[in-house]
Length: 474
Length: 132
Image (cartoon, rainbow over all chains, first blue to last red; front, side):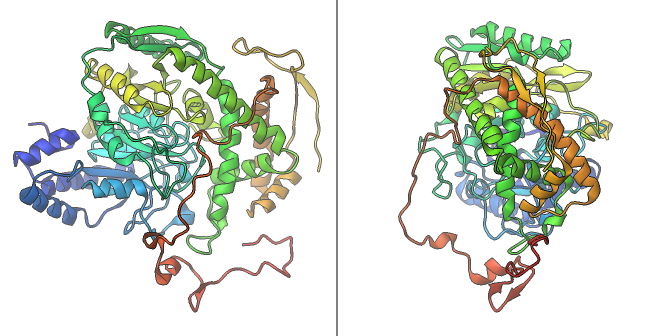
């Protein structure tokens, strides 16, 4: 039998059903690994003190009723921007140090209702402002593949938790790249839902017009299982879509991709990109062809414009959202914001201020319309498009120093899809210098089923979902 | 407010059709005075070294943002949200599940007084002071 930390959701449930191991065994196994490795990798900021107790309850339920809840006894790592009652929630910021939420986020409530056990809260860029975890007020998370490198971000702790096998599945959130980019740098699989597919209620806001929670896991299948539970209309978030959530499991295990048309985005093969990274994307295109899909080169707006558009939209929304941190009802005073957060609030205040609103904010929102229109044209012909998630593999620790636009540059290939509210999967498509490279498979709004189907078929026919030997790397 | 403008030519991208009228972009310098002003608007106190640093970094960032002027948006409306939904309403009824008991609502506050949050004085204060 595989070691417990390598099991997927289905394998864990199979083990429970066969009485191969108990939920207490599994949770204790992860807690032992966390005890052993977390001080080095800095993945978890806080642990759930009741995890073993909850595991014992899950075991009782399994014996009495069997596995009737889809996530019963499944250990989760949860990004620290989801409000969790009974567990400190800081969004990796000093201003929220010691904050204990008064209510639960919809997403965590839904996984708890489905029987999940939250092991702990994971490190992230402070307020999700970054793509490295280096802006965390509690130190960066280290990449399990190479501890001299960053895990990406902002959901870096959650992606590293899967890569280092310190949880079965994880929750992350994405504003523009924050699920897919750390998944790429850590060599795991992440799914970013269409805007409005999942509830933002109880997630500490960054940019409200693009924020979305999503799963990070060992496989597309596990992402699909979690997605089905966390997605869907929420009366507490008026931006959630009333369209019913598909049964994603029925999109899995497709024999081939006959009839599927995929666009390979020419502009996403950046001139500055390493040839070996480009080659992996071209290899993926070839793989899709061999699976029966049609792959054609397509053209989109130069991604450099996504940087300016995303910067204006995100900073403007950040300045508005972070106005609530006044130290009166909770948290500490605004002096406790880290420099990156202050920089973002200030730039957003500037782009929204009198005299600049039209030149910056309205302009960016108009460019956004152009991007959406381009995607709309593309999706008339194609089911999905592909490209790299990030221009290269994980960068070394310290790479963000004196780089005020680090995240924007690293997320250049996923910003457009986020701004347009599209859905996408990021999954491993090979290695360069022993470090994983991520492929994005991006689909139209609310076309999660299609993207899951394509990504699952690719993943089952390739062998890139690997895990580092952390005994060796740390 | 000190602000200087000059013109510089842009690099024309092959991916974008540049309309005839567009081709010059304002270079904007974000001065330290402006940083101080927006810091006050954002209720942030900045040490001098950060004022200097942010002024320089914002000038660079605005340069990147200004590339957007290469794109003709004269005929397209703005998109502020992408859901296509509008006027989502609910019944005007209290949802007991979302109501926090008073002691829970006050629990995380540093200063409370007889069941109320204590807030800083905002009137008759020296307006050069930050609110918090």
